[in-house]
Image (cartoon, rainbow, N blue to C red):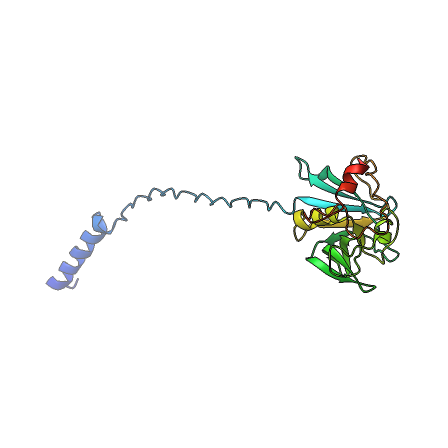
Length: 226
């Protein structure tokens, strides 16, 4: 048998030591599993509910069959069910019908077809207006009494005629955007009694007796009619 060199013997011994001994330095190290960190779920920011816009306080409804105009106010539910003003009116031969008109303009005086004028005109659709009975000129003392005496009948060319007091009430109290309906026979939420008929004026009367102007010389006619 050949003698092994000293180097060979040392190598064999070293390998034996490596394979026969526990090599702790090569053992896997146990790394603890990290504890999960609870991430709080973000609370969504509440979206504020928008405050409802009140809108116009009134709705105007015209019954062509009855020749009356009714102004309704809102009830506690926001529905237009409370009548606040009932007015005799005159619609026209060309009155248009819809439940979806709105007030879009106002004029203290407005020229009308037929070379006449109306006081307190409130436009709700194209050329259609609420306005007073016609005047021969733009002057409070130029009322056409024969036209006034037609209130309660179909008399205009399409607009809704009213006394000065009623036309002024709409002009003063119903803002832009107020809903207007003009129908043959609207379905009202409550029974509406007929208003007091308009006065029949002597033809020489040249003021509307309902005009609140302090210079009106005919307001006494209203007192006599009560």
